[in-house]
Image (cartoon, rainbow over all chains, first blue to last red; front, side, top):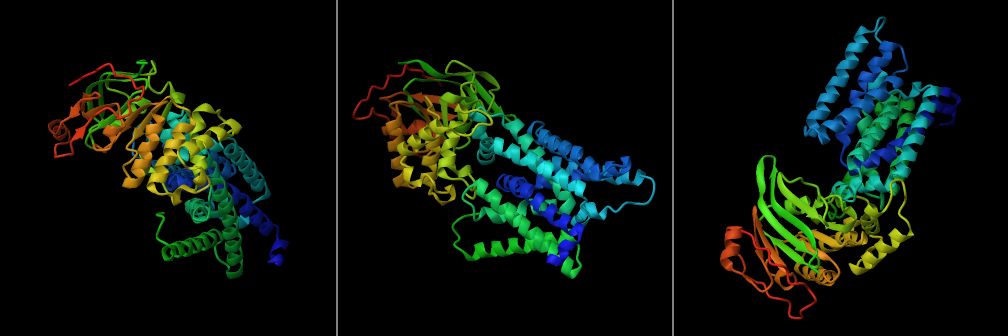
Length: 272
Length: 259
């Protein structure tokens, strides 16, 4: 392994893996206990429109992703909570619309077709140092917000109705949490890509839940698992010359399956 | 003594176009222990949600503590049905009970010493002190139900609204929960939605039979087989609604009768 660290891109890749795992473990835990993985997938795919916009305007695609994923979070939240449109319909509409905008804008961009593959499936080996700073800032923002709103987020996750009766502005808190998910998606797109964000957001947290007594413990364990999956995947992809994002997800999936099988063999007391 | 806590006047509620409550009038007074009986789909839970401000009436009015429902959050303790909870959620008994302090605490603030003390005393009342650090997934149905009651108590409410607190509980634990309510009724006004036609009669001061419309039964009256069977639409146990053998200082309700 040490010989890997001679290369700057490898050092950046490892840093990106660790930094993104922090947001992934914290926000992924909310996604899992609130069972909103599909919303997260919708936000991620809508963000493809942002990548198209970034290319079209000649900007860093990550800059385009931020407004698109935030708009998707707020749009899906508003439609499902206020306009009484069923959640899967709203998610499906945003998902497809975002992808379409991305495809059209990339088609309109003059010159050669850019390498979209790395945004759809991630390429952690090409993370520039400037993106590491962006990821760090987003990490800090997410961590700070979750620390400040920890009891409110716990309340709306466990029992939203009770939180509302207690006088919390649950709708605003809910939208805010969706926005934090959107920012996490922005971070994860670099590492595993749009298509596989949902896996890294849910798998470490889902495995961690079985072994955690509290939500903060689940977040910490999910972050550690995410680091482990990322580093293991990165190393395997280096050794066997495989796509890095896909290898990371495959490692996570294998551990998830193994953990699920362990639960099957174990006492059948708690439903999951 | 007979300060009205909840007043519903010709209350109508429709959910997705279907009428759930039709012209219901009811008043609950300070110190009342009211049981609401009725078949599933009869609007019992909806009535509680109207009182909580979660469901808006289509017509008619509701006041709770003299104001609109939802405006008096800190004075109401709500105990929802325990079946709706995700047992896999990583949360301890203490954390759930602390949620009862939400209406008393501020945004961005952690729970303070006062909150922890009130939560501890609510857990003691509900007999949960030994379970404080247990994950809720490891509790029995009756234990979880007591956690939800303790959560409501932690907010120091004047009014308790309980939605089928004995629905998923074995008979032995039912007695424990009714014993707990028996102690709480001295200091709280209680509205209880239930299917336990047999047991409640010994505890409550008034019974309301709800199947879209309301039928009130005051203390001392007998809830006949005929009226219950017409309520449920199938044969049920007879409930004789007598005053408790040791009369407490409970008020004699001011006789609201409605068809």
